[in-house]
Image (tube, rainbow over all chains, first blue to last red; front, side):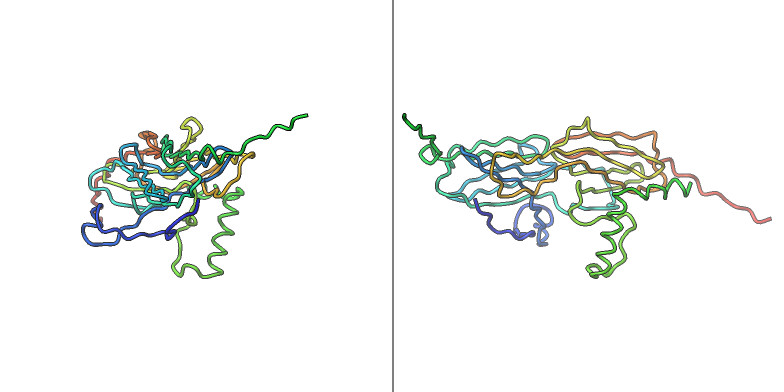
Amino acid sequence: MAETNTERKDVKQTGSPAAQRGEPEVVLRPPVDIYEDADGIMLMADMPGVSRERLTIEVDKDMLVLEGDARIAMSEGMEALHADVHSTRYRRSFTLSGELETGQIDASLRDGVLSIRIPKRAEVRPRRIEVRT
Amino acid sequence: MFADLTNYGGSLFDEFRRLQDEMEGFYGRWPMPSGIRSVARGTYPPINIGATPEQVDVYLFASGLDPKTLDISLQQNLLTVSGERQAPVREEVNYYRKERFDGPFRRLVTLPDDVDPDRVEANYRDGVLEIHIKRREATRPRQIEVK
């Protein structure tokens, strides 16, 4: 599974108020853990502030795209004193390889952590070969 | 009072931060002076702070936490949040990326002087810890008479 388009900032034309004003929108790149075991690939991404309704996971041919929109409740007339985070949009994409069963991706979201399980096709899973005596 | 505000130094964490500041100064990455308690990019968890005349709102972007492990304290206007985030490495699998933070963390931020440590509320939702601290009623300007 290779990552595509790794730049930290993406320019998008639609969506948030900033984009509607014609300003380039900063998109956050969520940190991920990716590992592989015998049955498939597991991906975990930190997307704090994103609820299930504001998360999209898309598979288009061999491309996996994760997008989320953080909804943070803010008081009216708030003035920023300090900001480590400058955007509420997350986006990251990866290319998938042919031995993965993209039709059976399983995803769950809990406390802002997205977990995605991509199984391998049955025919490419390792088989233990019994040695007959 | 000044002792309270300055005696948090001396821990390993602060030593590390001092080293980091020195490195940044040495390589001249940032020509502007940085805040005394500012931290390097990528420090976990990222924090945003906003204020209205009535209250100060602190947001910690800390997904995947058990809220029970969190320790939030406010000493005068110095807010400390510590806890532990578990994202352990599994041994029997092959990793391609390991970017997520794993381990204990501690962040310390200075809030405006008029926050009221007795009126603090915190909640944790969708991986964001929100801390709301009310501000004291604005003291009325006093007229000082010249005798």
